Image (cartoon, rainbow, N blue to C red; front, side):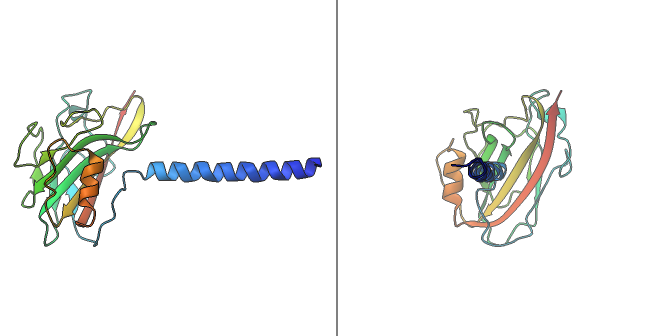
Length: 191
């Protein structure tokens, strides 16, 4: 095979590998977007602790008091029977780290208090996070600044899963029941 042909084949192989790497990076970046909503809605998730895209105060992290962040819910779609809440760090090199999972949050809930009690039936059932516990685990990036994404799903039913269910089980059970979705992203970095 002549050198020109070898070079052309090498360029094609490199292009295919580069395309595969880009596709993997994009799918990894969007990994927290697990579930499409059935309808667009006006569901809104906010926090008095930080603004969308802003810095999460230290008191809500592993470097502070590690207390859960206060959240407010508005624009609840008609027909909502319960909510699911997840908090994820998609910037962990090994894959998304789940910091907090709550499900079967009552439909009348309009706020989740700061430093929510560890277990309470009135605020939902805690799921198992990536640390293997059912408690809120505050932002704690190993280095640099990471994004922390709260996702709130409004469902047209309760899930009735056992306590400490994994996020994958919660989201699978919610498939086909999502009538609204809202996200809130904050950042936290360590020097």
